[in-house]
Image (cartoon, rainbow over all chains, first blue to last red; front, side):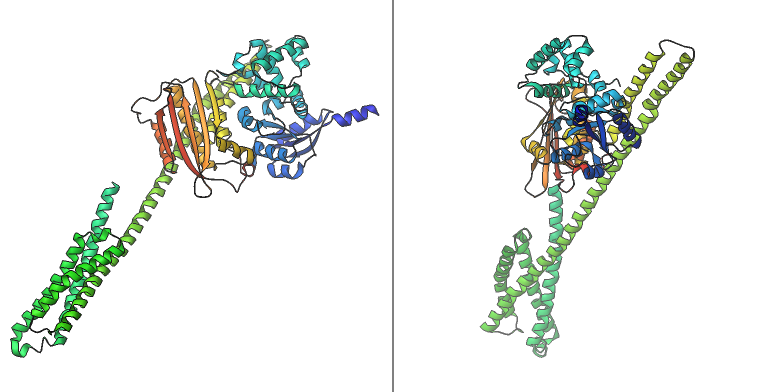
Length: 227
Length: 398
């Protein structure tokens, strides 16, 4: 009995808005394969999304940025205005990860971003969706790994070790996850984070600082591509 | 140029008025001649002889013509056409009154006209009225013709402007088509061919059991990713920049984020633009055409700053504010860099000129100057009609 209650309370309800049928099918299948995630809506466009995604009907909306009848950013803003507890994860095939920095200051819950390329990896997709539902900002791991600090920013002042920790936090890893990835202990991760908050001049407490650090990473890094 | 056009139109306006006035005066003289016959001018033939009557008729006509021409001459000397209607009428009536006096005296000298103070008074009044009406009507007719001419000219200019805009649009479309096609046929095809060849090679290696094949596959997957993010993206950028469906500032931000990380970048929004974003969640402020114009102009400024000015910092400031007319707004952008700044005088940059003419044809202004720190500063204003009826989410995005 206890286990049933636990499962019911931790299931993450997901809505998918994606116009390409193959991609939508892939997302549904990947998410449905995880027992902690349930896909409640899966629609191809803005109009359908507005009809079915009613306040309280889901925890995370996974929105394609380019939709045939509009765009995921405006749709996300509208959905979140109607339901401030709704978490949003944007999905895009080209790198538009900088797109929602202007959005972040006006939303009730910070958004996450995943490239379609990364979303093909089931574990990455599920981890991103569940972390986003819990209020974390998750940035696309592939793009995060390609990111480097932009000149004259606070992030550029971080030590390589601190930058590496911040990268993994931006990918949505917990402290334990970061520690495992880097082969260090959790306490070192925590101490790195304290230094990062200090260098990036992030005040406040706990969870919000983590989100602020990820947003600073998003704003103060860039990716270059060989031409 | 505007002064020349004005002068020419004034002289034409004047010529029309002059012709009408002279015709009116001639008509008056003929009418007065028939009036003179009514007074008994012809009946005097018995006593004065035919020659005498004819010469008196000619004298009368000449007096009227001279009177009319004097009024016309006076009116033109006074530059009556460039004055408002009240002044025109007062001036013409005044001139008619001044020249009516000698006319009456001359008429009284002609033997075959009636005599007496009543005749003098009535002829005086007729002279004032005739002069005023003849010249006044001529001015009125000339004004009407001038109005029609100006209107036709305005319409012609408007049509020419519209035609120029269409030409410009077609030229721009051709430019983009050529660019997209060059890139499709050139670099993109070449790079894809390279990947295909490499994959072929890899397939043979795999068949031969080569150990590094996995690493090679990853490397080529990465190469494909690069092609997508560079070649394919630059093509789609030329047609429709990423983020443009969300808003001008978002597209500008995305563009700056693509710059090498050695370049420091920032986008600052003015208070009005900020409050718009906060209030109208998700609805774009500028119509999509103006967004395109603004984003490409900023891109040109940034490219020039990095390429010619060797800048390391690019700072974009954007603000939008309403104009007096309801629904009419202006988008104002300043792009500052820390490069060497534009040469003095600013040479005609081909690319920038294209953006300037595009902005000017929309009633805006674009200027390239040096900022107080010595770097380049591109500043432009772009008028637009606010997009209030549609929300960004309802417009086609791709």
